[in-house]
Image (cartoon, rainbow, N blue to C red; front, side, top):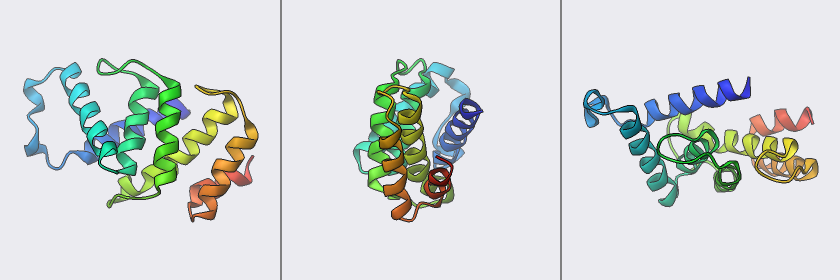
Length: 144
């Protein structure tokens, strides 16, 4: 279920992040070119301080694509970076990125996915995020 949700959020995030359909001419691009462009856009956004950009970049690494080799450890690193940045972006989907990144990072620690399993660290990530007002983290924290 999580993979389905991650895939859906990744696709929706990429769609929402397109400033307008006129900015890109996807019809003349292959899937690998689109993935490369979206990966590079996420890199640039993360580098420029966008928590959503770091979250999106983490999803690229978690899932892997023709643009980047799957690297779960790097994904967790980026999710934590996004989580610690808090919401730095405007827009409904973008504002959810940091909170979702916190949950994804905590889940990785809880399951030992890309990092050593550490349930206490997972709880700590969620608690810190919850204390900062992230209701999604509060919800997950109650269920740990």
